[in-house]
Length: 287
Image 1 (spheres, helix red, strand yellow):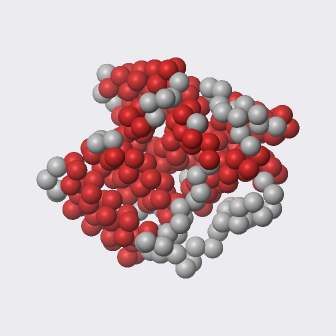
Image 2 (tube, one colour):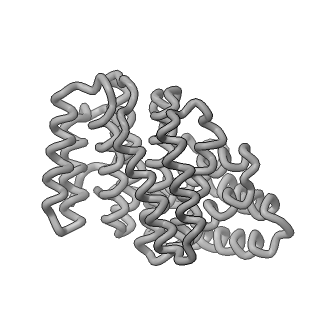
Image 3 (cartoon, rainbow, N blue to C red):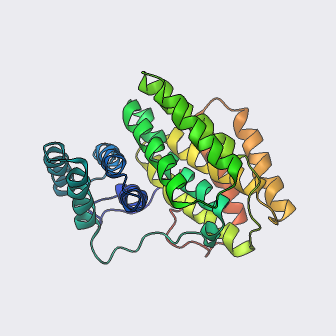
């Protein structure tokens, strides 16, 4: 799943920073400045562990983390990291296109959850359990604040997960409390999707999962792919053949103990469903 990032000082970390900034900006707009800061701080720490990150970018993230930690209040802390991320990404950065299904409230929540998992799961796997929990909790609060039309059951599960996690003291248990709530929402029935929207969702999952794989986080890659697959399996109006292919991939992956192979089972299923020219920005499937 390699991609030529030699000319990019951010390397595979670029999509991680884009995704984190997208979620954090929505959290800031909902006045959750503390959550915005914590989410960006987790992403910055994780980005510094990604192979291929340039020395200058690494230094700028390190400096931004230090300056944010010493800032006066959460809003200033968040602004310090937001400014650093925007400076690294540049004005001409063109984030991966988001699926049009974000207009559907449940799909919006599920998409935000998928984006959060693409950051939180790799952070968890590097040992940053607190950061993983921070990302998940911030995303849950943001979804509750910005998607008021989400189904009551989905809102209830987000609220329940937040309350359950808040009652715990161990970040590991807190992260899992949030993740269990996220997975329950991911299994809910989704919206009616066009074939183009299915392709966009698969492409977005690849854009998020492939950099994690390239950085050595095969489990984070697999979890990103599996989240997208479960969403599409439960969505309405997705062709039966597409659902069956994804369902078969999920079932096959569940029987494997090697997470690298699990990631490849999902990626091979995605590639089979995508036209070869559907996502020219996605990494080529190379061993």
